[in-house]
Amino acid sequence: MKKEVVVIGGGIVGLSCAYSMHKLGHKVCVIEKSDGTNGTSFGNAGLISAFKKAPLSCPGVVLDTLKLMLKNQAPLKFHFGLNLKLYQWILKFMKSANAKSTHRTMALFERYGWLSIDIYHQMLKDGMDFWYKEDGLLMIYTLEESFEKKIKTCDNSGAYKILNVKETKEYMPIVNDNICGSVLLTENAHVDPGEVMRSLQEYLQNVGVEFLYNEEVVDFEFKNNLIDGVITHKEKIQAEKIILATGANPALIKKTKNDFLMMGAKGYSITFKMPEELKPKTSSLFADIFMAMTPRRDTVRITSKLELNTNNALIDKEQIANMKKNLAAFTQPFEMKDAIEWCGFRPLTPNDIPYLGYDKRYKNLIHATGLGWLGITFGPAIGKIIANLSQDGANEKNADIMLFSAFFRD
Image (cartoon, rainbow, N blue to C red; front, side, top):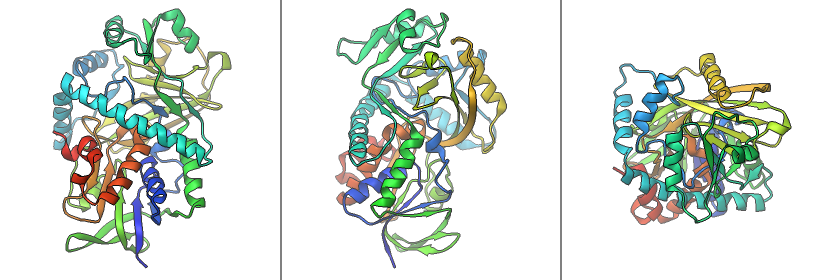
């Protein structure tokens, strides 16, 4: 029997698409190759960081990254080799690091950040239970130059709160005197991504969304300008509409005769318990070394590092040690109790703009990928955009696709 909507991928984007498609009355089936308990979305920092914060590719980032490389503090690590896409990605990243592109991207971030927050509110109203706090994002600066640069962007709108070292310690008791100060971006929020994922899975199952876990999609069958069959390692599935939200793995994208300018960026996190009196009072980001530190219900998580052009799925102990070393330079000594180390791959575009929209060849295929480190921030918004697009029937009829899709961005 042909299914109405098949979502391939059970991460935050796939589940958000399923959520919004169900809200429109569609019968949805989610296919996920794992058991759905520990994918990339689970390892996210949990930041909903859409407001007043620049994308990765922004003015000065190239020089700043080179300086941090000399200190062994750079957030990006490139595994150079014979991969043309890596060099194309780097070139596009550098070209995007300009004021005009950054201004446009930040405006889009705010537009879709508010949409995500509205949907998180709706999820909570629907009875989901997850850690959710709207208490801002504390941007901590360790270089005077970057702190002064950020202060110049602040206004009196209430979206910013400039803090000296002493005031920063009220929000972040663990920092030492090596920091320069901080800026609290008051509009941002944070969640526990694991709780979000589990709550969303449970809700969708309870309302009748079908889940096929431990079932990997390996190929497609095509007929004319449609995908006639989704081939898993178990069966052939037919669907009226297919949403491809598989994240960093390019294999299925290539089977649709596409090759997006997107890299699987390997990121790391450490989740642990720490003394209550030293825990952050809100989510924070050490801006100059790109390390997030996020309080959760019972634990704290730090996330950092993005490795490009590697397929090694194992945890690199050197990267973990480097994260701890970089954090220790700006914090008081403390013990990470019951530490859980994690790594995973994120689908990262060079300008933080995702690939969203109907496929140019196959009329029943919609793409939803490329959010990189911003999956939790924009996942719910993307789900809503894709659901609306499915009703519109064409990319050009949907303003959000025209604004926020890499298909329509230079």
